[in-house]
Amino acid sequence: MNNIVEAGFIGTPQLILIIVVVLLLFGGKKIPELMKGLGKGVKEFKDASKSEDDTTKKVEEDKSNS
Image 1 (tube, helix red, strand yellow):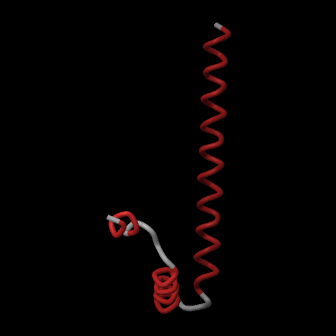
Image 2 (cartoon, one colour; image 1 turned 180 degrees about the vertical axis):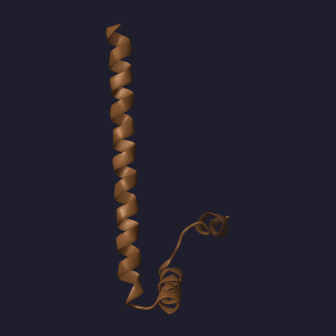
Image 3 (spheres, helix red, strand yellow; image 1 turned 90 degrees about the vertical axis):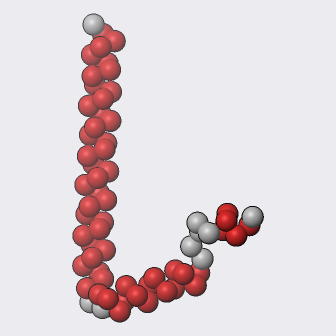
């Protein structure tokens, strides 16, 4: 039963293996560029979801005022 529960978690050995594979595939110089792009994507996603929340609140306020 414990094996089923633990199957979804990533442990230290798995994390090390993932890091090694990424380094082998992309090399040390390419990884900062990839992380920069990933950071920009996350920021854009947060900004878009925040503006969506603001729009939703504005529409709800307009409905309650009517």
